[in-house]
Image (cartoon, rainbow, N blue to C red; front, side, top):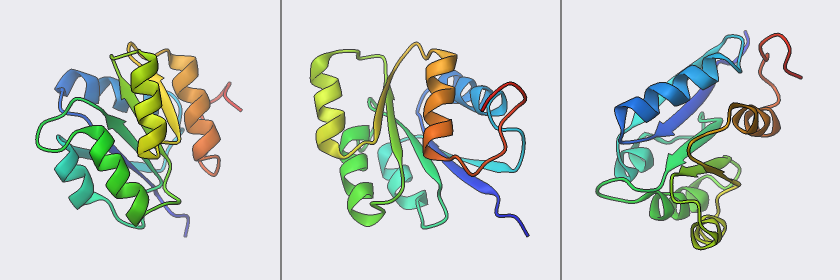
Length: 132
């Protein structure tokens, strides 16, 4: 039986969460589940060995995305984490790298950039027609 891809989205803004989920639906043909965390603390609590990729916002309550990423990379070093934020500065990119993130994706998210990162980090999924 084929494993269902597990995607953890850590995003406190409802509209941004909906956008990320829609982008995933336009990228991955089928066979994935999305787990939502509304802050970094939930991301830490909800993560496990079954998670294939984490989409991590930076500015969240309780524990921010950088701190959550640092913790998760220690616990699950093989799980790719894409930090996505509206703070598109060199400082934020450097902080993403230092936290252990695998990629930095500025908001507003460009669909092609998003799809390329998903294809890079979870190549085992079946992609929508036209994506390779």
